[in-house]
Image (cartoon, rainbow over all chains, first blue to last red; front, side, top):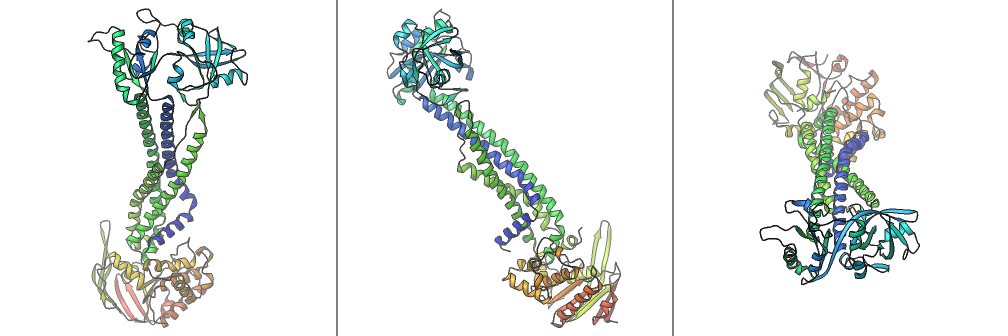
Length: 416
Length: 223
């Protein structure tokens, strides 16, 4: 019996009982759909994070304070470590070779009030180098100047998202805003950047001189009584120079902090590339875990197919007997049921792919706190899902098919 | 062309051994029409199963058209059933979800010969049912269903047709029609072996074999 014949017979059989066939396929549809949408979302998250980082510039080294005893992710959290960096440190780093810009940055979350409008924003205290280091072109007005920093001026530069929400289409330059009940004058607006991190869009940021930040908004002192700096961004001229600069930074800061040779660094220098690596690893694992969980549902779907096929074999015992009586060999019956299982899982897989694609598409349309996620349904995920579903179909169909093939025609004809 | 030499068939039902056939010897020539009668438990179905290559005898020889088919494996038996033997059952045994012509085509699917449709239609013509080719069994009367079954048994041009109580589920009129078809096919040269409990049907054949307790007790001209 030719393969085409078997496929046609299998399709006829499945169409003859549409309800049962659909219910059987449901498991595979959900399983494949879940695998595809979850893995695509995971991939999209990876890609989104990668491009966000790339937007921020990868020739950036970030110096942060860290407790020598605290390891791992905690040491990277500037807010939880003991403050050890100061503005003097930042100045000292400017002399290192191949360094283009050094920017000390303090960060916090505040509510900014303008007239009757208010908004929660991320506020950065920084110096003029901030623009270049973090790639924030100015839309209008001026950025923070060295004089602003020296004089601790009460000035702010608003991100485009903040401007829109507080001022609509009005020109905010020269206007007053209130932060922590103090008045600030708006001197500039940043261009729209897009992207987000940790739930805050990059356009919802507000920049003020770091000295103003330290003295008027959030004061923190190092153990020697100086104003603390949360992080120092160091932009390096070229990727090749990164390692050398990193080592130079460590030397300079160790001297600055008067650390003895046996004392560990009370700061850490990380590159964007390192952080990106970590994030990619995390999202990579995340994607695989999602895929694994979704695969469980695929497994359940295949058990469903095996179940139904077993029931089907029992119900069609007489039919199998008739076929054998007119000359069907074991091989013919085996092939028939195997093909039925394969057709079921292949069709279910196909529908699952379409469903998974739709879900990915739908999720891409949602903009979760400014973070645009482009779920990418790449061909390799599709091929993986389809081949897995067909293999599962065959595997779950083998046992019922063998039972069908082994039926004794005499007994089968008298069944039921 | 059918030679049974001292056929026995024993099978186990749990701990008990059942001797269904205890030494049956039978010789049937091409073109004969034979009725097989006997009470329940006489071994009729077992005998038909062996002649029809649905089962192997426990001992003894079965020679079909000169070849020893006593110990054929499942695949060879299937081939015999497909090409040389045709079956007609008491409860028709049609595929309920397929049309009449699809049912008739079934053996051709497994013999791999072509063309299917034409051969199947020809077979339906022979039983006078070509007009109902596309109807499903649920849309056919008992007599019509049995005719489809006969067409199916004919489609691969077998030399023997085995019928197991073919009129058992039919009213007397349809039953008579069916028997008439068998007679016609027999005249065209096909050997017909029919199990029946209806003595009047047996009387219409030329030879009656009576079974009791797994053995032939009489074999000769029908009354």
